[in-house]
Length: 203
Image (cartoon, rainbow, N blue to C red; front, side, top):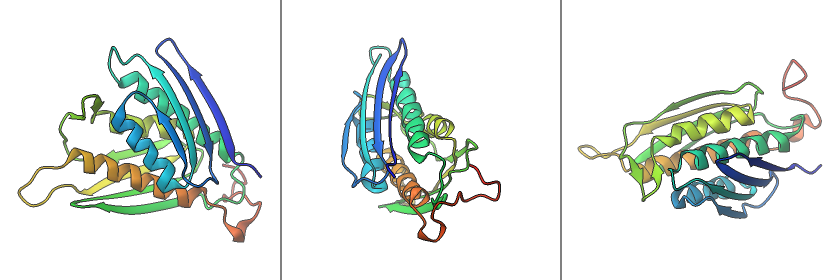
């Protein structure tokens, strides 16, 4: 069964196209106009093992908020659509990812119930010229809402003793951890072929 989706989201502020294949090989074509965000979405494809296309044109002349938010919403909707009735999937996934001095834990439940908890230390306001670090939480909230998943992201360690958090490492480790957790949760469980992993019979 093909687990693919194509989602277009068009507003007065942005135009977003997302295509995803949950059973891909990590290939990605990403263009949002926000360089670091592109880099992070490449992490989702590579470490999640998903083929992913994201094309966003947004009102960057104002700021990056609408572009990043609407891309996350479209990406979440694509995940939800590609998962279908979720029969045969593992449902739960978790990953703990180190990146030099940073350690991040992510856990996901493809529950059909959007709920996001995110914990990170204060960071420098920007990574590169355009990516506001305050948006990382909002990305996860928007993605989780549209994907209809429960998502916990916790930065367990962020700085060497006496040092300050490296915002690049803190955010990138989050994207890698969430990607790995999604990879596990969306995987087909050979022991539960065709069975929805819930006593309710639906997710």
